[in-house]
Amino acid sequence: MQLWAGLKTWASEAVKHPLARWVLGGVAAGLLAGLLVLLYARAPVTLDEETEKVTFFQIGAGASDGPYFGLGRRLAAIISRPPDAGPCEPASPCGVEGLLAVVKSSAGSVANVRAVSAGHFESALVQSTTLDEAWHATGPFRGEKRFTNLRAIAGIYREAVHVVASRGANIHDIADLKGKRISIGGTESGTADIALAILRAYGLTPKSAEIVREEPDLAEDMLLHGQLDAFFTISGVPDTHVADLASRGAIDIVPVGGDAAAKLVAAHPELSLLHIPADTYRFSPALDTLAVNAVWICNAKADADLVHEMTRALFEPGNRDLLPATDDMPPLPKKHDRTMEDAMRRNLMMGAASDLPIPLHDGAARFYREEGVVPAN
Image (tube, rainbow, N blue to C red; front, side, top):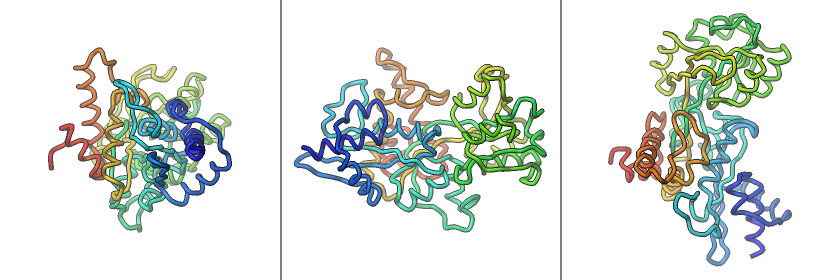
């Protein structure tokens, strides 16, 4: 059993989540290095010892300090269930038997598309707009073959487009960005394409402003040091970094609304309108902006039974609290209100299976059909 103890240590370090720490333990530094090499070279990897079997499964996310990485860690905790975790208890977290999921950092949505398509990641989190571009070989994928081997597991939650401007830069709407110093996100993040589409919708071109491509954490520092006037970031509401800047009175949050936003949504169904209430961010009035889906994807060749079980785990009431609460996916009610719980669980599943820019994976589609939230065909 020494090998199994080493496996548990490796997974504990990789997943970094309270649930994972509850089920994993031990120390085996030498085995750690060997397993990491094995996982990098071949994935998923299945190891057998007597009657125990463990399967490793990767979830590609974004930068290690970004929101997608945190969401990936929660997904990893939800679907993981080592062989010695014991039976699932009602209303308690319950993953896929024998599965250990690992979150992997990446350059962002564009990089994740290529990694899943090529088989370097078993799954990943990708913005819906980036998936639409990958499916049609447009935007950053122009000139490449269409990525038709991608499949959706679930739309996880909606993210808001935050246009963050330095207070005092006199930026009150998108048109005011003309001539300003703007960061539109990293080259592989997917944020850049949305930012450019928004600028064009308001009559601006890349030459209308001084545009740089920096990740949000660096853009935030540059803005505070007077090196930027504004930056784009896409994240859940509220975004902790934006909230920190707002609490200091250092920023204005620029709305993305009106006819230009409505026309943009009409042309891009993967986008939607979103209202951020007043006082969501300190000193910020209510405002309208755009939203995109964070979609959990895998390769079309992924094992259908495994994907079916991961999708089931995602909607287990005991697992729901491990995902961040948003207006679209609030925490499920406690077990004392079963009728309300069942209704909200059904709404969550319907939302996760709808408005996706790529087809559902066969395993996920089978789960949604069994639950009656997608048609039989």
